[in-house]
Length: 142
Image 1 (tube, rainbow, N blue to C red):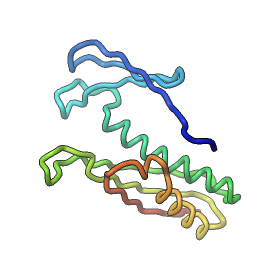
Image 2: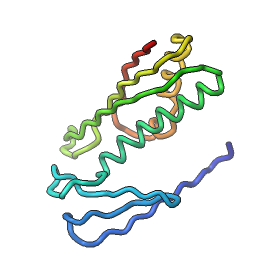
Image 3: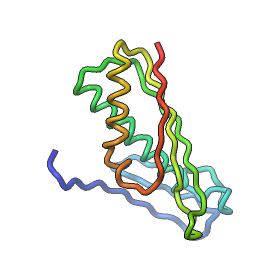
Image 4: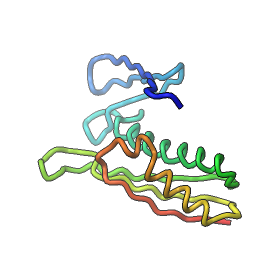
């Protein structure tokens, strides 16, 4: 891998918090909206949703790379993420903490799976780029 790498996104929105808009990267679009908790209509991904998705996707992608490179076989990985938005000590609303419930199914090497998810959690690029408190719990199922 040669660094630096660049990734692009674009968005355009009409005026008003009740209006839904889209965000796009490389021809793939997602609907976005101000969440109802902030006076918007909901019905699309909020910045908070996209933040949680980016962290989750980073964990899954990094684990998959490590698993492939170390020849770990598994049927699937499922990650359920809970992002907590709260006020910090400086009275600023922040992405305070994010917890991942990770389930890996059907692997004959649970110890290796545990090691690789730990490695992915500690080394994911996006995971290492945020101030948010991160935690995970792992379950391995037959």
